[in-house]
Image (cartoon, rainbow, N blue to C red; front, side, top):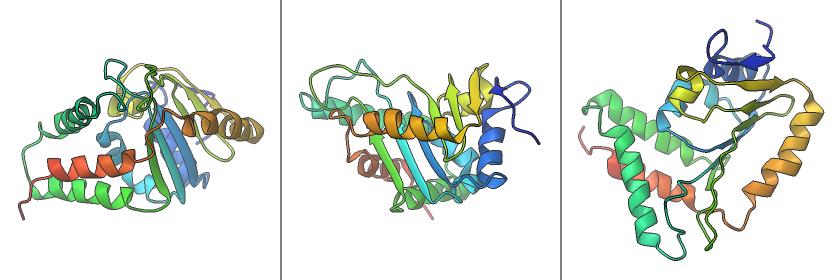
Length: 203
């Protein structure tokens, strides 16, 4: 299927196009910037995501949460509540626990990196941009890395098929925010810990 010029989750969904880029176009290095992230989005793309050789996820933060430097406890409570809200609606079953175990195992891989933007420092910052950057393609638009962003919401994302633009976005835009002083470099560890807290210990 030819790649579309834009994605609105009507004729083409972001979920389908991301899978196509990874599986059919052999794009195995992916950087995502997203305002919000939900673990169900990863589950929908799990098979394709397992093909990636490098994955960086940069997550925005709720601007209502105070900076971690001045109030670490509130921020940690927010992380815990946010993750648990995503999971608590589903009654325990073996497959549910398996899903959590697979996500944790995925995050533990060295080629998977996750950072939280705007978590450090006194200045309130929120990364609201959404970008999906491969080596030869990029998608920029309105879709967060969430189930609704992948296929539920009416969105508008431009699919750019010029490798030079993807490279420029990665080197001159994504890297700037990825290495911003406000970024929590240890967020992947926190994310894994909170998922373990949310996962029932039943066999």
